[in-house]
Image (cartoon, rainbow, N blue to C red; front, top):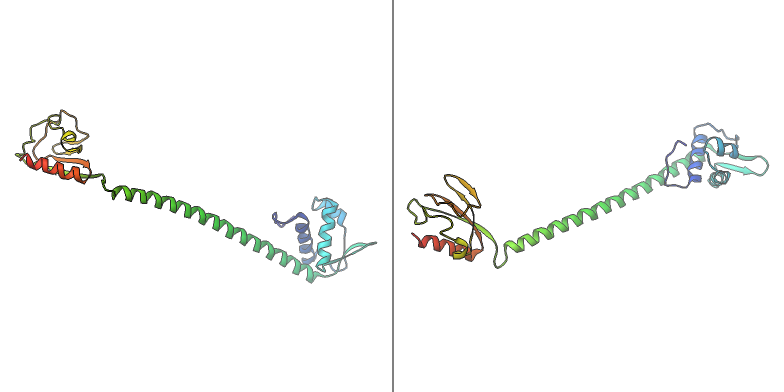
Length: 208
């Protein structure tokens, strides 16, 4: 069959194809349609399916079924009209399916947006909680008392609660070891909440 209308019953699709053949002049008005022959040779459907297809065409005034002579074409115009109605109905159903698909896609996108907003809200809440974790830095002067001392000698975490996670100076260190010796103009990078930041700054300033 030429038309691919798999969302419609087979007998309706067969009726559509026969109507197209009539509209195209393959069957003229007054011509006989041999249902049994078409069922097996052209459409590969059962005789019951063909009977239903011909009944549809008769209901739409395309053919007339006579007991003795079988199906006879009576209106090319109505065959064309039926084929157009069939195509319009299929197109309309396809449109509904497309809209449903868009709605499903929209729901998926909304769920993703909601999930991302929830994640951002949690991150915001953490960053703006009563004890938010933040990073801060402190640069040693050339004569700061810390210069020349090891990281182990000054245990920042025990004294201030701050975590020293990086140093930028003559070299750049991430997670400096306890043996590191502080150098003039080192920039020390810490993490901790606001209280820890103030405590660490006061401690370092107090060493001057």
